[in-house]
Length: 316
Image 1 (cartoon, one colour):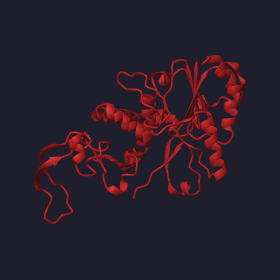
Image 2 (tube, one colour):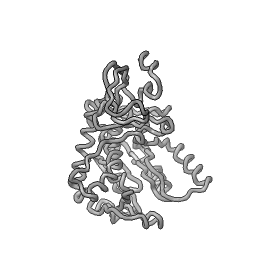
Image 3 (cartoon, rainbow, N blue to C red):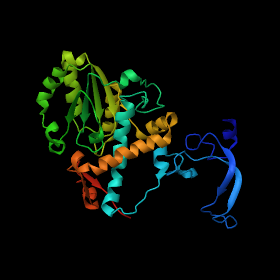
Image 4 (cartoon, rainbow, N blue to C red):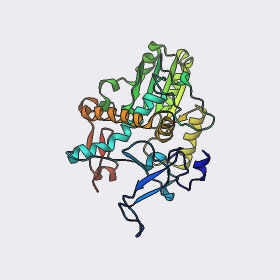
């Protein structure tokens, strides 16, 4: 690490660059210096890139305040790919969030997928194998018709709360007044509430129901925040929402630091190969997983008419 600290910025940043610099040769492929043209070979002390041959990390100083997820670029082969199949690649990040949530935050096989906190590095948050264990747990998904929510897989029981139940099919047809009985029948040891952006009133109804019922009140309650309701908030509403979530002990979920933590303990090549394999499987079978998901246009976004079963993609 001593050698890395003496390496000039930005290459001395271990979160974006390798920690084992080495002497060797490198060929310039692009240059802004007139006397250092592409094709020139240099010998020197090189900090290696993140060890994945199809990934590049943006290191421009003005972008270093961004989360690392926004500075990672993947080489994309568009040969023999039509525009429609290319457009679906925009959904990859949504599936990636679900993958990290299901495989690492609630890891079912810690030996191969180490348990990772919903927001690694955030002080005061304890996340161990006990928190990640979903055995005899019921997961309650708020804003369940959203695209991120639909990318998450869960075990024993799943209660989906949404204002548009038709989008998620038969699983979403339970009326709210039947939810309490359904939950009690499963006798959950743990209730995991994942808020993907529940609408006004759903939090009061849900947590009020839990507190009123003796069986549910005895379950361990874990609350994760992934998204927020898409609306314009007043300052009072925003502060009230933050206070309410703090009282519940809500833990924020963020994909970027989770991915950073995973890459710090697993071989990055294997991580991205596995993620790519899952993505290709979803893409090849998307009509089974999400038969209603469609690609639409800018007019819907401008008019706030984007539906949960739609994804907007643009070619620029």
